[in-house]
Amino acid sequence: MALLAACAGPLSTLDPAGPSARAVADLWWIMLAGAGALCLLVFGLLAVALLRPSMSRGNSERLWLGWLGVAMPCVVLAALLVYALALMARQAPGEPAASMTVGVEARQYAWAFTHQRGGTPIATENVLNIPAGRPVDLEITAIDVIHSFWIPRLAGKMDAIPGHVNRIRIEADAPGRYRGVCAEYCGVGHQGHGFTVIAHDARGWAEFAGGSE
Image (cartoon, rainbow, N blue to C red):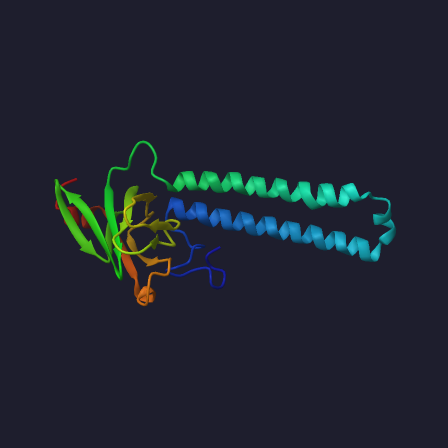
């Protein structure tokens, strides 16, 4: 799927590199398929009404307005709502907690990340270090205005709100670098308010964590 035009790249939600991002991409494809099916049905009914008007005369208004106009969209939207709620549950930290938690603090126009190494905090700016293949819980807040934390290839968006902590779980399938951005307009420097995620292999993570894990 990622080979389609404009479907790949560092900010593509259709080129997922982790379980949370895959759930988002799956929802997109499901919504696209559902929208396509509904469009075909509507155009098909329109064609029947225009080309074979005698076929539609015998149907009551209850069929056209009640079942096709109200009931069918309600069923489709309810199914999408259930799936979307399940998706949200998959992105939020659950039980048991991940083996590692990282503090995320947004400000105009930088991101501060705090890891724990043997009880000693490690602070990095605009670079989030995580081990590949392991879930990581992020505790996200802000110190000035509302921002939005987003790593398109690893997870969905999560707001960074002053005085409040939001949590999201991310995981990278493989070592590599992933681009993150602020997805909420936060001032004149918003365009450059990004960061880099480095997913380390076992050796790289041991060097970063200093052998504390």
